Picture (tube, rainbow over the protein chains, first blue to last red):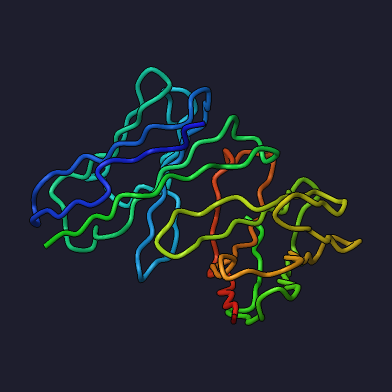
Length: 115
Length: 112
């Protein structure tokens, strides 16, 4: 079946511009997670959605970062006024449930480069 | 969150078994032991998980120590495609909402 998809696969933007990254989770998965992977920080959690609600936003690095999820499905991560330190691979994952008995399925990621 | 300790790197030859260790001395009774791997230029992928008993699936086996303070991921016959970073992660069933906390992982190199 279809896995987690993300778009765009690559995004190059100028410092100060806003960007939107999209995630399409596996159908029926209620839990959705955003992570990012940068050279200096490794893989780090950003935000968790259960349905359309985000009970855990503790990993968002600043108020320039926001995310939403609609219809219990598609999620968008928005970064406003991008900075060079935002350059990273942004990964989305979905799971049937947040319970640890279920695995997370990751998308291929969006590579963001801020110039 | 309980932390895990893994060797930075390991090497293996193709078609030989590989044993990847993980120490988690502060594990709690409700923590599940998960393993994910990340192949070059790809997102992480789930490998296996367990709570107390040893587990087998089509990809690997997970051996969990009796006191649960360590575990070992076993790849029975390594292939070149198994070259990846392997992450050992503890996931509790409490209030962490299931988020994965990645450490540095073990870089596995497989030689032909």
